[in-house]
Image (tube, helix red, strand yellow):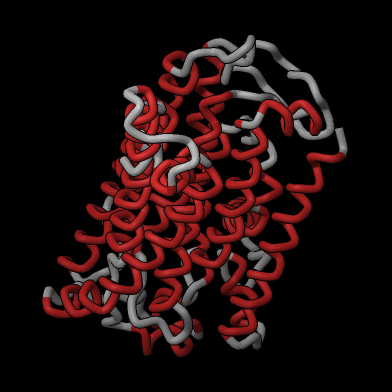
Length: 381
């Protein structure tokens, strides 16, 4: 929306109502730069979170939307560590969602289809999370929606997003989002995956949303890891959308990706703002409303800038968390034994004697290292 100020400058110039040396010309001209608008989106999302955070907390408390915790019979010793969090306001993801939406709509070019696909996926999965959280707090237990309902909803949103990415986003100079790019190779490994691209995008979106959801178990853990991932994909989006940089680094170029940094930095700003209230001891939790939406937003950002395979590295903490659950389930079913004290893996370390803050900060450090390794792949092509 704010980009219209730059278009206003062009209109004024075309009608000779403003000269290129006028202060107003220079002022309106800055709104065309993606870096400026990305910074504006981050600041706006952060400010919105900070301004309305306490109001959201009070509203959640007044509605008695407190976090239900699994019983001691279900989680054993973990209840001693987490039981004190019973009643902490949940569904705080509405603050993240609204901050991302408002700042993106303000600062991004709204004629960019990639922006709308990302927002559709974020809101669609956030809606599922809201429904799941509402069931949990209304029934006063931690079960929420059934696994089948959640998977069907996630898959439906992901399939629609996958089809739009594959067939509604126009190719740019021969580059189509149906192409498969992998790290360490300049050219596409597969030039056109066809319908398989929809299946791949669906898998990435569903997997990412569930992985972030599993990571959201300690105060600020998922928020901090999402922050580093968002900033990384802001950089990827900027490079992918810039013909000179993408050519120099051997990265697929698509001009529509130039708006992705605005969405990514809106996500980053929203995460920083939410972390203000979610840092240990948390005043509110994001719930599935936030975690499912964050995972979907991150996945679609990765697909939009053709760095979806690198997401397995950049989002290394999310992969660790998801894999720990898969390994634990398979091991228990096949061998009758658990590999970890408890899964997801952050609980394994917590039960091993690490203080909650130690687990969180160390996982943040890992997330930062994974992000740096992901960016390093740009030079290894």
